[in-house]
Length: 230
Image 1 (cartoon, helix red, strand yellow):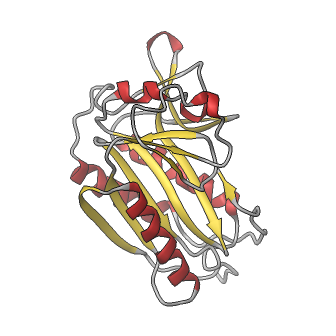
Image 2: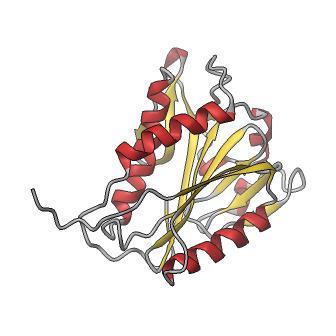
């Protein structure tokens, strides 16, 4: 059966050793996105961890930065509000060429969500979307909902950067310096907090496994918003 969806190659996979400083990661994303747009580089999925820090998205409210002196704060340029990154959190940055994947920003963000949900399902965790609340959520005892993964992207000339962050075994107390994504009525959790003991290496293997089922070429052609989407 013929399809109008453009072909898309499996991207380059990269895993960074140690903790990557945020300005270094941001510069690398910017450079790689530019090279992809110019046809000088392939798409990239980059697995890494950061030292403890907070990032501010384009919709961040200063009052949500509860403890501004706890960790460095960086302007991320992505969509969304304040987010924590640190050791024990698997951050994945994706530099994807949406010209080859259907030019549909909403479909791309939905696929990021689905990628996390399917990976969590392999671990026996039911990750869920919530209208009006960015990220992936789990329901705990008593019905309380807690965030286990953050999602924030930016699209420039149809090339994506930023991506997802899954809480594997971070210090959850570090989230106390911000109101994550401006949501104060719900907490955060991690795989370890849910009783799942998994290494970053194993989680990366699962993410690569589920990726190929979630990211075929997209088919809709819709102009993205001017700067960021989350």
